[in-house]
Image (cartoon, rainbow, N blue to C red; front, side, top):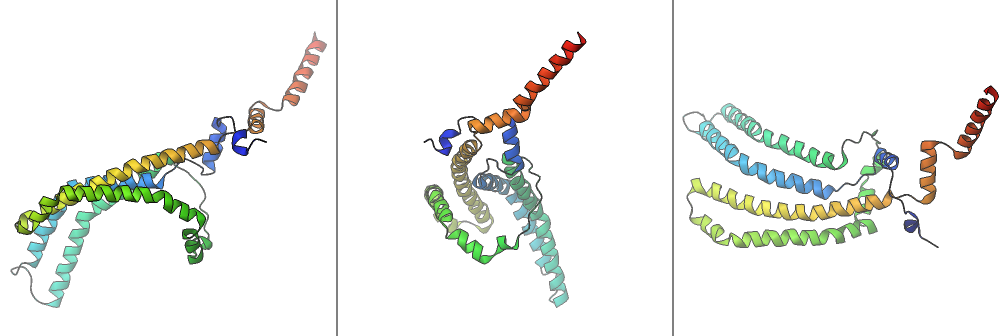
Length: 252
C-alpha cells in the first residue's frame, strides 16, 4: 500500500498554491531573514559609525566642557537630556533602517499575507513557552541549528585569529585612533560571521522551500476535484450538452 507521500504525485496547481498562501502556508525561513538583517546591519553600521561617533564626540565635548556647564543639578539634568536627544537623533536613522530591512527580509519571502490576527492568551503562557522549548520539535530544531552555530563560531574565531596582531596593538594606540581601529576589527569579524550565517540560512530556506513543495503536492483525487472545480461536474456538463442538442434538433 502506497504511503500518503507516494500518492501525492502531481505538483500543485495555481489554485492550490493560492489557497495555501491564503492559509499562511508559504516557504519561509526566519533564519534567512535574521541573517539578511545582520549582514545589512553590520554594513550599515560600518558606514554610519563614523558619523555617529563624530557626532557624539562633538556633542559630548561641547556639552560637558567646563566653559559651557555649571555644577548645578538643573544644568546637569538639562545637559544629560540634550545628550540623550542628540544620541537618539544620531542613532534613530540606523534603527529605522534596521526595522525596514528586517521587514523587507520577511516580505521578500512571503509577500504580503493579509490575515485576521488571532489573539490568544494561551500563546503567551509560560507553561506553553517552556513546553515548546523542551518538546521533541524544539529538541529537533536545536539539533538542526547546532551545526550552524558551530560554523558561525568557527568563522568568528578564525576571523579574530587573523586579526590577532592588530588586536595586540590596540593597547599602544593613541585614543583618537583606538576607536577607529577597534570598530574596523569588530565590523570585519561581524561581517564574516554574518555572511557565514547567511550562507547557512540559504540552505535552510532551500529546505523550507522543498518541504513546501512536498506539502502542496496533490493526489489523483485532489487533482480530479481541482479540475472538476475549474471545469464543472462532467456529468452535469454532459446533461447540459445533451439538452442543448435536443433544443437544437427541435428548432431544426
